[in-house]
Length: 201
Image (cartoon, rainbow, N blue to C red):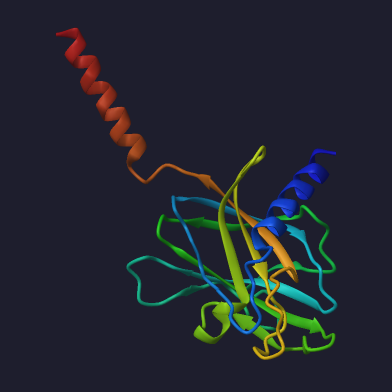
């Protein structure tokens, strides 16, 4: 039951966050950026789409890097690591994407595997490419009873003059589980030893 409540709560927050934010012909796409070092887990929330599509994790780019580190492709589409299908993945399914540093940008792709209307089969958008960034929208740091999430909405009609930019064709959440910065534990231990020695003198 808790999983169902989690999904409903996050989906409700996501829909509220995206309501009124989309406007025909002009999209406000963006790229998810890490605000702390940690393990990233993606959770599938919901979909309201006629077409069937799949989400992929393309890769990441460090804040000082010039190039993207691409994730290994998991199938013939060559878009990186498969994460979710908007019609074949059960709600609340979680997938680990790996560990990343503060300031890293994470990139995703979405491909239509079964078309409907203006969402054409085999068309795709990648937000590591300039012409694909507008089809993803991030609402950062949504606080819930279950933790802090960033919720990302995907628009699946990649024709700008046809798209409604409602960003609800797939909704998924990213959670970051913080991990210590390398060396932080050692520094803390050394500080404790120094303090202990000072106490003894």
